[in-house]
Image (cartoon, rainbow, N blue to C red; front, top):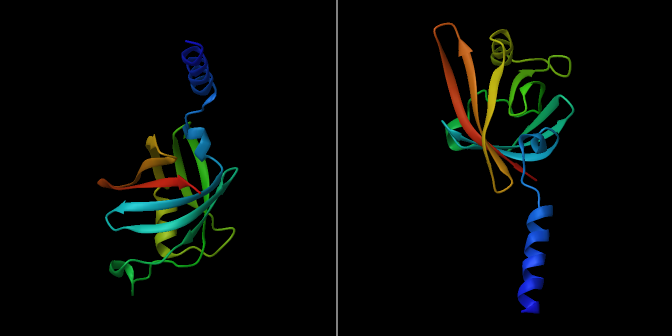
Length: 143
């Protein structure tokens, strides 16, 4: 009986003090990002305050030979709410490509943290333009 009580107390203590991840846990730190649609791409993300630096990993075959940027990319994050932010490229840290300038002119990517699971958040990234929008899905995992 004492073992059962002790085990119950340990479980209550464990669940009382264990912490579930929230969107706030992904606002700063180092992450591995994986885009799953339309192609699989992986890169490292470093976030500090409202800035983000992206370090591309190896390109999949579909992107080799394209003008996909392989240099670090710098971005500014504007939080809309705890789980939604707008990402624009930072032209003060590097010269922007034509694509990056276009993204900024369109208002940036709207990123929504859709769910958090196993130390990762799954996101939907949407770029709105006149007459429509384009969305990508992926995930960030704490490194």
